[in-house]
Image (cartoon, rainbow, N blue to C red; front, side, top):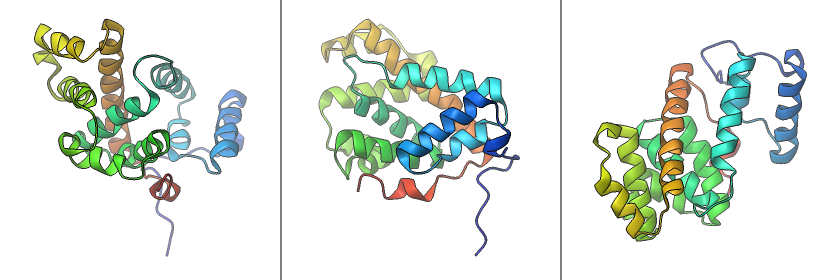
Length: 189
């Protein structure tokens, strides 16, 4: 069987990339044991690669009241709504690992409203989904509801920013036909 392409666009070889991008990809490979395809697909445009991952890291790795697992929940739920196979599979794996729960990613992806998550997390995902699908409808009622669940103004910003950023990411992954790495399917199970 022939290995499927990871993108409909040409993918550069690691050795031909600018040094900073090559070093980042090799560091990820060393840590995870493989190179997530998103790195290779986006590397074809180095300036965009750098901007994408700078914003990604700022949103996803920062400390705060929204845990890293909850941040991944936002990605999985909104990516499913956007029918982004790559992000559901890849971030589902990260969610399973960060939540230390082999079931959570599938539950959140299929229907977070029935998932084994807290009412606070459901409110967070309701808002993230609203931002993803109909941000023009966001109102003060949404902010009040989130405050009632203990979210600060900064938390609300983070939920919205993650949802919005991954809306862009989902669209690019779909346009490029980005294929999830096989390794993601079994991580955290």
